[in-house]
Each structure stands twice: as C-alpha cells, then as structure tokens.
Image (cartoon, rainbow, N blue to C red; front, side, top):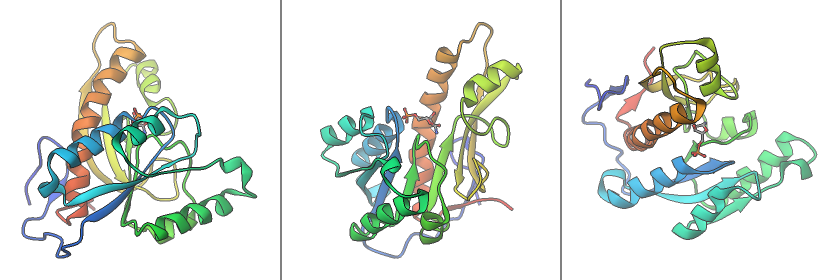
Length: 217
Ligand code: GRF
C-alpha cells in the first residue's frame, strides 16, 4: 500500500486490470463541466496510463455548457429531460439502456445534480463515483462551498467517493484539503477547490478503474 500524491487513499500494487480492452467511461454532468473537461484532457494526454476513454456524456439539462464541451471534444452525448418520464426509475431505465448499448464500464458523476436510484446503482454497483466540494461527511448536499464558509471552518476540501443511495454518503476513496483564507468569497474558494478537483479526480479515476485503489474500511 502507498499513498498517491497527497490524496488520502490506498493503492494496491501489482493489481493492474487484466483486460486489454479500453475501459469505457460515461460521465454524468448537469452544468458547466469543468471536471468533465479535466477528465477528458487527462485521458487524452496520458492514454497509456488510463487505458480508458470517455465514451459518453449523459446530461439531464439540455442547456448545460458541458454539452458544448463534449461536442468540441467529439464525445457522444445523451441528453435527457427527466421531467418527461413517469418517475425517476423510468428515466434511469432509459439511461441504463443507452449505457448498455454503449458498453459502458464505469459511471463518473461530475456535477450531476440528481440522486441516483437503484436502477443505475444496482447495474453499476461499485463502478460509479462522485466528486464533492467538501471534506465529507461535512457539508453534504447542495452549496457545500457556501455551507463551509457560513459555518466558519478553517479548512474544507474535496472528496471523491463511490456512490450509494444516499446524498454524498458512499465509501470515500480520496480527499484533499483546501484552506479557507481570510476574505475568501464563495467564488474565490470555489476557484481553488475546482483546481484541486481537476487534479485529483482524473488521478482517482485512473487508479480505481485499474484496481489500484479502494475505499478504507
Ligand atoms: C464540482 O464542484 C463538483 O465537486 C460538484 O459539482 C461541481 C461541478 O463543477 N459535484 P463542474 O460542472 O465540473 O465545473
């Protein structure tokens, strides 16, 4: 076991994925997509280290900027309007069918603003991860950066975790600390948090999909 670049996580050596196949990732996003971009760039820059591709963007907001990013990167997009479905399960059944059509191996949530239901969770158990802009279990849910500022904590950070049926509650894979400075605003703190996210998320994805990282406990 060894630690990776300051992240609190565990790495197993000598357990490379045996498959020669390129790992196919679907990124789910609802907004700007800066983490989507960081992941796509990291994978493009280091194809041999990742041995993976972002095969699909799943987006539940037809006007989200992330869709432009996917188009510019030549990545297939699946765009949905969940309100048009009878319920959340019906929406996810359609998403799941598309994932299966595309032979998706892993789901990476990156600013996807929905709770995932058992339809997707069961199909991708242990193969779905999320990034959250706080040191979980502190400040789960919406507006985590504002929550940290309002509370007055001196440090906050970034957590990458496996997804379960709760809100930001799954097993933790990696965390990085970001200090809160005097005079920080939500914007200034968000900028530093995003910079850390863009570094840590690709690293965790790379290690996890090749079996070199798992949650503690
Ligand atoms: C990130 O801060 C991430 O932690 C949270 O949503 C935000 C998405 O930002 N889950 P972006 O769309 O990747 O820029």
